[in-house]
Length: 67
Image 1 (cartoon, one colour):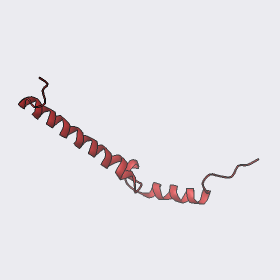
Image 2 (cartoon, one colour):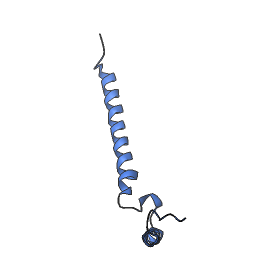
Image 3 (cartoon, helix red, strand yellow):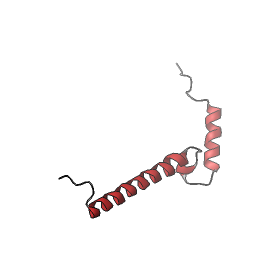
Image 4 (cartoon, one colour):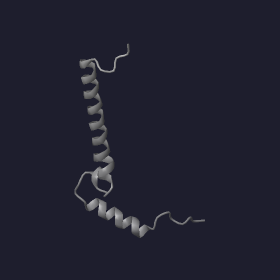
């Protein structure tokens, strides 16, 4: 018994040919890959930097201390 393929071989071969011909880094080849490998880490780093800076500011000015 042979199972039907999950994705047609012709389409798979066409996608493989396209991705092998693109001269970029592997993690930036797809159209949506820029979001997951660039935008999300950049947003996390920006948020972390902001929170650290706010914490340092609050500590240096004594804001938010409990009595």
